Length: 394
Length: 142
Image (cartoon, rainbow over all chains, first blue to last red; front, side, top):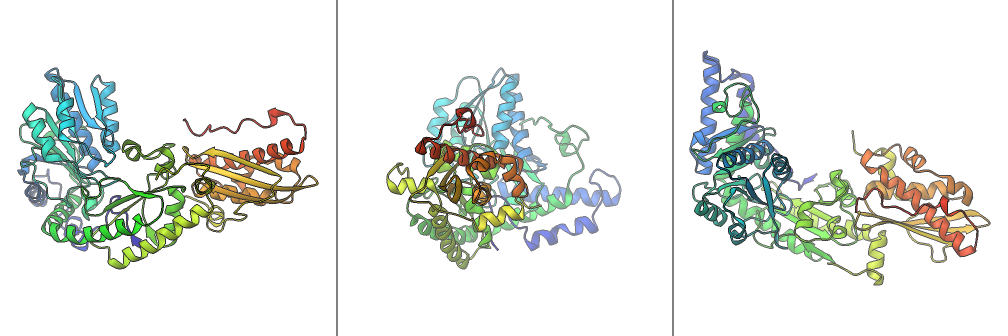
């Protein structure tokens, strides 16, 4: 099986699994316990916190462990919103193509009385610092813009947006779930106040993530209970997973340049090869993208059947088609960049990691055109397009 | 458990009766590209019997499988019998569909009715319009 769905999740590395094992078998104490086994666990927890902080240019006390990217997003947004409300600021600025962990939290905050404004994104899948600056109001308490878009892979100008937010005294959150471990991140350089990440997107375990919150930003608890994480996130820490995350981020950071180079070369081959399919289009800017993510729309076909046939051909990928999500609408991301519904249904996301090879790309470039052609051969939409009864969009 | 039953996968991977019929006696097209599925059904009818049925579908795995099995279920049947086919029977024949995919079976059912209505219109057969509710895009909110 060629695994080309690394934006969904990655394979935990052997080194990560090995790093985790002692925390199941030997160091199983509760970090909150006073006895020696507990204190050994507390030490490991602290070490993991230091390692993660170092990878982000943060200090250890600025890192809060969570159950993953979604929880980190929820906590970041709520914390910043509630801080704003204390000062009478209830306007929140974000973008139309954020992850649902952000969009749905913002919906919930709207019900609590906050005003949420979602910036439109360009056809290239980018927002600009100018857009943010123009939209910032006197009562803006928070700007949240994702670092790298999860479906189309485009990288947003986080440093520029951070500078604007900093200058206007507005808290800035970035969902860096698709960026961490793949792009160099220094929270100070980027003027980021809050940042979410998730371990399983960079060969760490699932069910664990982290929230960076700049020193001085008071977090609100989402999960109430014990005093873990300085009282900001109750519940016994998932130590094996946290240790695994630290190892994964350390490894990813150490090999960031070489991995990016290798994966970008594979990605470029994919883009060039898939672009040859007639009436197809790359989604998102050609270059401002994370190394591994490629997203295409193919006119006249539907994405789920494309995925099923690729799966039969030994290729694991994903799509923004409505049918793959269990919802009625195609991807809000593809709609946000201006793809019409009928084209958005025919999307394919391939996301590579450094474990993919040139041979994988060869196979993908052989199978995708074959499957697209096959599905088009039975598609009444394609038939109408070819007959001129329907206008080509792509 | 896999998303789809073995029968769905079989019909998806080896769809029966794909294609068009040049001199079809009735053609029905339902669905909407915006919603992500369109089914086009062609019928060859002789003496009130469906001699041949072919389909073209733009849609997900279950839409293709529903079209495929529906053509099998109506071939050789009388037009009256085909009219009685329900989407439930299509679902049952497929060994079930996930809840959010049931509309695909509705589309199959609607495409059969649309093709028969076209056949009636072409041949001047009188019918009760109530038997042919406007092919809806009810599953799609747009």
